[in-house]
Length: 114
Image (cartoon, rainbow, N blue to C red; front, side, top):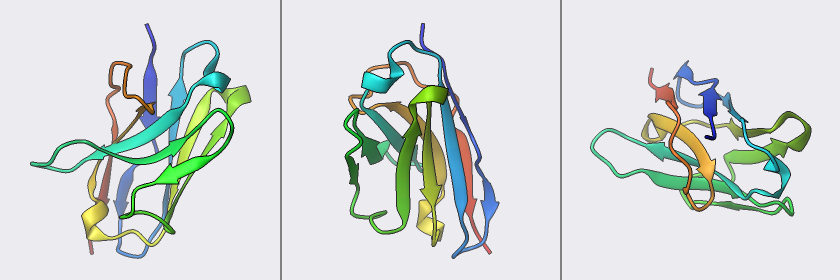
């Protein structure tokens, strides 16, 4: 069974930055299309960034130009660099396949507040 371990969240002021990490305990990580998702209180989980096995990326309009997704296949890890954070970015952040087919991990809380 796959394990997804997200880390790197925290409390940050508006305009600040955080880097999230997700360690994936699954073989053949390099061929997986991965995504970062977030769920704010009272809202549905949404996909914010995807990275494909080819290395190409996609972003939700709300984070485009501020967030960068990347991966290290040697470490079975996917990252999300978040810059210029806004209060509306406050959410629990999760990683999963871009198809969201795996069981969810515990996520990591990101709170943007002054």
